[in-house]
Image 1 (spheres, helix red, strand yellow):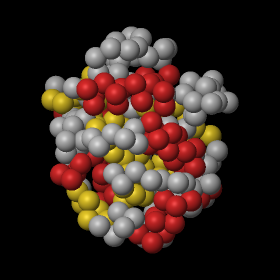
Image 2 (cartoon, rainbow, N blue to C red):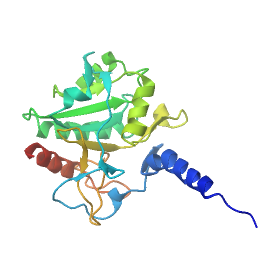
Image 3 (cartoon, rainbow, N blue to C red):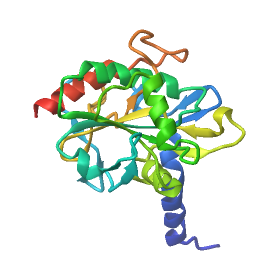
Length: 241
């Protein structure tokens, strides 16, 4: 009888978790959003916001430093003391990015007079998305908040921030429309740089907010409910903390 190595099995499980778990939460491929997430597990609840914990410790956003649409260097330290939303996008995206950006404009307009609120949108196509191109994108979508930073920089740093820093899947996939895949999530960051979210009906953190369904649509073609309205509610909670 063969003796199985528990060390080997544990290693395989660990590798599977590192490589695949960030990708199976939600994956955009072509025009279809594939979901396997607590975000779809019943109606989310109101109340005190959760900290997202890794190894029982609240998850803090990683260090970053990128150029914004005005060619100014922006780091995570510049956003400390603000409540802000993070997303990943690219300006030539033909599918979900326009929806996400329009939803963030709705959020922007809600908090236009709030000095302690901001947005950080990171491109996953830095070769084309230069500060000049991001500035044009800003004008096209009527982005007016001076604390909404459209950020670009080193490709490896951007992908590391998405896939490892936030576990928000992003990849270059030439065969799909636009040439890139990425999650349609919004991450909510508190004033101290921690990722926060509300709990779902089962008492688990939803982790991220669905950014691809507008408040006007209410539900998408797959029956998934919009979460922009609850994101706005939760921003208000963090601003009041």
